[in-house]
Length: 273
Length: 297
Image 1 (tube, rainbow over the protein chains, first blue to last red):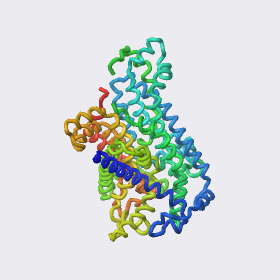
Image 2: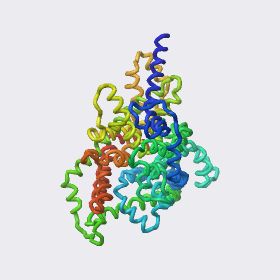
Image 3: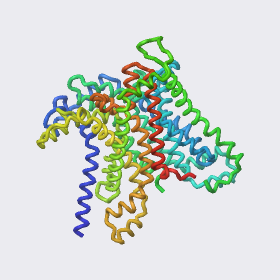
Image 4: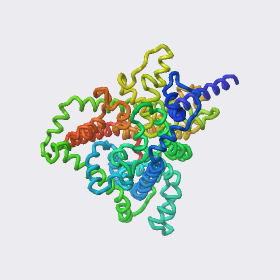
């Protein structure tokens, strides 16, 4: 009896140590955002202090947070929708009508992700300039959806493959067209998988910084640009940087936490049998 | 794909048009810039010298390949890839086993552990660089100082390790997100049977849990490899590739050539080499763990 009690206690301590340890950098940033710039760099680090909102006021005054946040939302949702619209039919056809080339196509799609973004930065920049896509939300959506598309196809493919073919066959016997089969049979069956895929895609697009820093300036700038504009060390800046960072990550962190059940259940890539 | 008995013509009938948009989109996204990159890589093309582009053949490649920077950057890229993969796989496995146990507050702990995955790479790098690893005001400096140890100059003495630590912190949650449900899907009766046979926690791990985790682990490794081969934001924010070239990886080297040196030709040649390296690594990887991924034949 005593040994199970001890075991439980040490497990609890270890579990919480790991949880708090991993979360600590975020917590520390959150606390710092409520300090004055002087207390932010105090040694020994101040754990107890009188919280202030002055950093948030300063950050919101300097930049139009709402505009950046709106762009981030539109870009991550738009890219995810576009990627899903392209990927669902592709994954469906590969999962249920495989040919000899299916495997090669999947691997090829994944290999496009191996292309380091900087390797094609110059051509993309020149193309985007010529097609007037620089600093447009649409231009960024195109880029982001292309860069998540392989992962989206791959995840959907692994979910679709878990659906027993018999179910689709039955609906085909009843005279359903492939389109009806996809919309009325497959999609409802795979809702958790599709949700997990969409969640991962939204998170990746939200946090994408390379392209938004290089291809947007003002009109289509996302929260990545917003944070970057506070990252240059000009005098005392940690508290303001923390406030800006908190504002940029809070929406996606809350979103991620709320949807973590779907994410944990769905992120298996078909690995859990 | 047993169980589907449809005629071949039926199969051809809808497979192609459904697949085509994705393939076309990716082809456009990949082939057009890739062709342009290949073209530029054969030219002397510097944005600071307008109108002076000329075909030079292998010149850009020769200048890159004979320069020590490229080999250093390749080494750094592979070093980071292997080190961060190790950190995330070992850490992710350990955390998953811990979170799979029953203790009060495990659901909250799971939320805390996965949180870093949702944070923008630029933001995490900034937090670590300024508030934790800063040699003067950082929390780590204060801790080592209070313990009577000297200050660790993270980014000037161990830049690659510091970057690996940050990236490992960001991506360990991803491993947990995949490994934890895999562990939970393990049949509890199997564990119970092993325990009755006298297996301790270590035997349980080696003979039951680890084999079960191999496939999800290869999936974690494959997904992470894609991102780790072109790490950029973390290096850009923390060390800027320095000191010297100590933390410059291929992605950062190309960035330096392209955006800081305006040398499109050389940067493009670097891009082509980076793609070749990525494909070599991918090939090795597929050989090593491919059998864990392939079950669709």
